[in-house]
Amino acid sequence: MKDDELEGWRREWQAQPAVTMELIRRVERETVTMRWDRFLLLAPAAVALGTTVIAALNPRIDAIVFAAGMWIFMAASWRFLVQNRKGIWGPSSETTAAYLELSIERCRRKLKDFRFGRVLSPFITAFVLAGVWQGMASQGRLESAEGYWILGAASLFTIGVVAFAISAQNQKRKQTEAELEYLLDLQRQLKEGGR
Image (tube, rainbow, N blue to C red; front, side):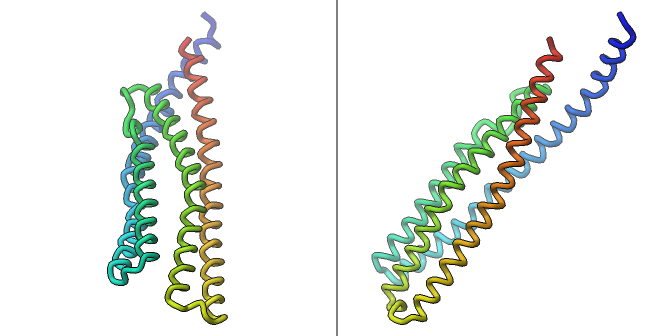
């Protein structure tokens, strides 16, 4: 056996625990984040509850349809979140390969989250803007130019906020794609090193 080969094995052996510990810490941090992420749906739930209260206090068909639509969007989001998180709460075993596989699957699920958000966001935005327009029209607020200016300003503001949020999510998506590539490369290296 050559000294270079022995030195290479020594370096690989010493580098391995650092990667493993980093991976374990990362999985633990992600697990905590995933637990807190569930509470992000409380804001849309509060909005849906608010629209329900408004519909109950002022029982017009447009208010009832708006409240029902908000609950449908809320339920769809919650269902997707629960389905997308199935099976990624912990590694299948306490091995480096299992932690790596879990990290890869979590990245893939995050990318699904981004796609779902990109599809759902325009629908919710359009639904809310249509609901605001219908609500203002049914209350007689669109009988003057001032009402239309308010509606236009509210629409532009809403679209701007959603566009900003989608742009920020796009940056996170790119980071997740790069992270996934890194993890897949690391997985290939570990498989090649194990042969």
